Length: 338
Image (cartoon, rainbow, N blue to C red; front, side, top):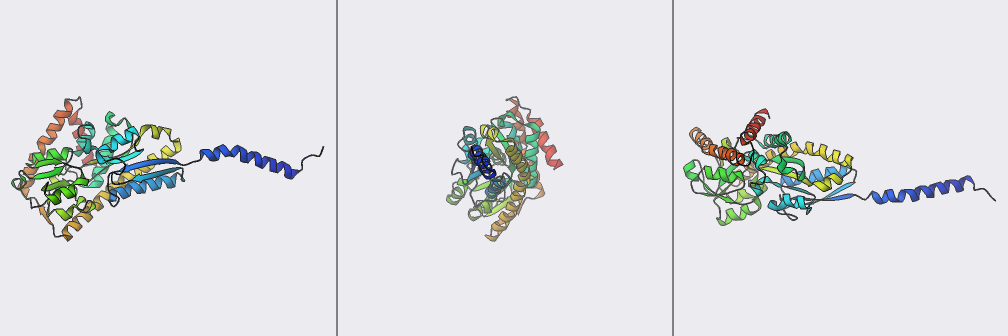
């Protein structure tokens, strides 16, 4: 019987290698994830989220592909968190404030504690979460958080005193609604996506939020004045969370990559918030809108007016067995540290 020559042996080995490799190639199909973002596609925070998704694809060498759905097209702002929990989307970005009362520990971060800018607010809310790890977020994988700079008052007519604000209908969400109420206004619960039309039609007479909304959500077109009330500057904390089962099913090396990237993207979002505030103010001024600074007496009056909001938070969460004072003290300490 003729013995196989060297070429035949090599071919046999090659064929065997290819056959054994077929399952490996089949298993190399990319992991595809969906990402719901409530910000419109033109918004800087949406772009920052999309950049994170692209960088995940890059650093995993295409093993993970993320389809981004901006503008609430997959889940609306107030349904985004539940959408992640139930698997409608794998990842979601929205605000805790849109489901008021559901996240009592994280709610403290939105109190009017005098946040100086978005980068500080973003670093603080992440450090706060890392320190307390509240059980209210145990049904998701928290990738990272971010938060806007001080929420200011934007109105259709100038407001320079508390009496000017009295009984004005102001769009607000979460704890900012209590801030508006404490200042003498009438809070009207509404997400950012509905605010432009509400201002345009006179449903509300103003809105409270970061300066970036004047350009990012085009609200500078439908207001006339911004009141710089940063002494009572609150923030709104945004979450970027992932379905827990989907997260646990990822290979460990991919989870490590995503964790590292999420840490890096904290400052990406914080700086974007501050850039958005800068551009928002420039845009508003270009439209002829005014910027009002409070007098020293009014600053004192506004700070005193919101003190009950903080006290009420401590009392309310205390009834749920949460040490609200410790939450506030932790945040105040972190703001000073950052």
